[in-house]
Image (tube, rainbow, N blue to C red; front, side, top):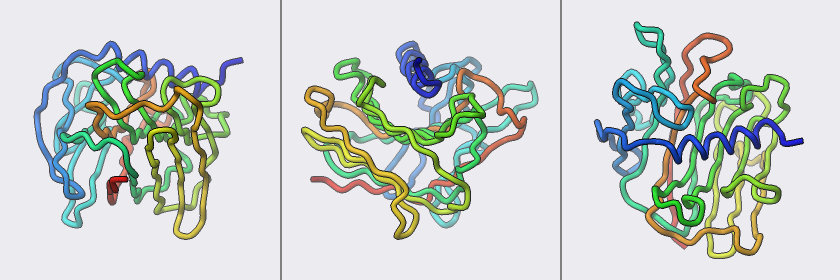
Length: 239
């Protein structure tokens, strides 16, 4: 039987394929790069589909240079999600994301994505993902997933992140024949996995890094409350 997170990943990919062009409403500076803040205007777009807001209530960089992504509910009852994407394409190399939020008990309907994505459909959109999600299943024991798209047997790895880790670092190293993922908390390795399957590793193209916080299938948080993630750093190291 197909696992819930596997089905959800397929749903996420399909929603991205159906996403119309969104407004590039705002630019922010974070971790030495310039990022575009995604806005869906008055409508909804993928993934989800969801409302995405470019408001400073949903996306901002604080005085210490940390990026905040927040899901909020507006006065009309709509849940507003958050996403930023990098303007330059980086290609092969090591991508590292530092988090300053404990995600061990992430709401079952909320997804945090750290990934590359190319609007060109070649090579499955060159999408390489680190996702924090239970895919709307409270009983799902796994809440983190590494994926080299498309999500099929051998191209993803799911594992459980427990509570108690206020600061974690997650990374993937993308090379011609291998993508290696790793998650650590200080000196503790939480998980690691590599995809070396022939034909599964995309070459670089026009992909860019995306950081997004969204609701699976557009469903409201099960606990009915806003949720915020702090990303304290991002680094890229070329090969």
